[in-house]
Picture 1: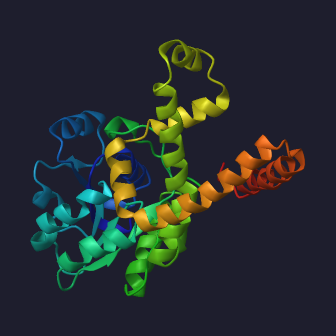
Picture 2: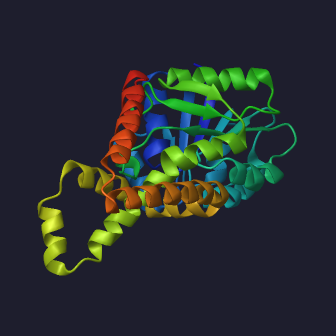
Length: 290
């Protein structure tokens, strides 16, 4: 047991998975959960997620040693305002948001004296959402990034041990660097997937039906990504706009290069690109992140 009590705000895929894994691996004495959605709370109780599902957000965080905000990044500020007065001195507040600079800006002003904020981000997920989407092995072998600057070393070490207990591989990094990295590895791929699937939806009905019928693995992968929670991803793009737009500009430049190569039938340029990018897939597999 690492914490006497952890409180998880938001019982979606990430929050539910943390609760399930932490309970299974006995990483906390008590695991209390809360979700603003009534249906999610009912479902979480039926599924036995955590030790208790609170009807009140303040009751959930009361006397907790670790408070995890597993809500969309656009909701972080509002949640933090609600719980600030009920946090016990010495506790740690963390989050699971996909953007870090914006979350730090929104949450930090409401962290009371004696409480520390340790931002973090699990690099794990599926296209499913809600309490029923959670499962204990979600974080096994996946990176969980920690923004540890300005936080007491003992608090960082405890949280790191907790995350490693969930099965995650931890790494510490700077918030701005984090946002640039995930802009290309996570945010831009989702934006592209939403766009490609949206293009298919806008096709004439007969072509669109055949696109669905004859979907190859590539398009199916895009539809899987594009099935992710729209609220979460709306908030991500609105809160990591600078980094995403930078990466989108680079992508557009590379796409124009490809358009020219295809138009002028420059096969050598296409082959060189495909051969170079193939090595990236090999590296991901070797790193155990496939």
